[in-house]
Length: 258
Ligand code: MF3
Ligand code: CO
Image 1 (cartoon, protein in one colour):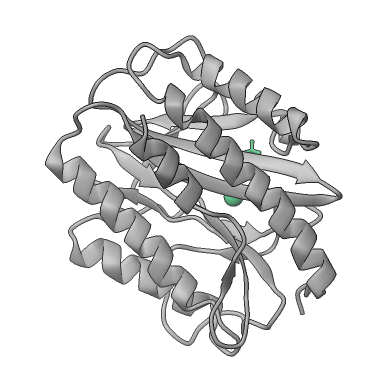
Image 2 (cartoon, rainbow, N blue to C red; image 1 turned 90 degrees about the vertical axis):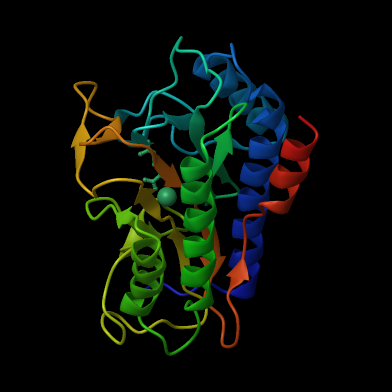
């Protein structure tokens, strides 16, 4: 039903995704007060090109930058600008790489200085949601099982799930079928098959789930202006356990040294 990847294609997707992760690790040292989101974007673009890739988002439906940098109440698709990071911010950095014909796509939410405990909990729970979603991405399960696992964990913790923006298939195109919602009912939706490559990307809000789009045509923001967190991995569906193509470990290592 959906395109399934050969082992060779999966290895190319892994290379693109590992370059995305290395790029996010490379910008970790810039995640501090006073740095502009444009500087972060420029560093990321240079790093990607130095390593043989091209930015995967730049030019996509007219998107102007390498990264999406979304601060606090910005959910996703924040455009890099002269805005500078400040103490207490949380920052989703979403990065794409195109290399050898395949796209990598992954996102990580960073903290700047001292962040409120309830917002730290939002980040922790969102990362746990991603992990729980990934644990459902095995042969025979369905798209709705992924979304249900994410939604349940977010909501028992008192948070809410953005509905309008979803995960997606990833491969020769940045966005391929199927859509991968972060909410759903168990046992519903398309059946997952070995070799399906998808990006799972929970966007979890501290307050209500509703969002607005800014006048810039890109930035998605919570309607109640409360913070939102976002993590994304690209993965391959396998029989027993999903194969995660992007890598948070190198980002977390870099963060611990900042
Ligand atoms: N990870 C994001 C997404 O899948 C990145 C897209 S940004 C865009 O929606 F500019 F390329 F659209
Ligand atoms: Co994505």
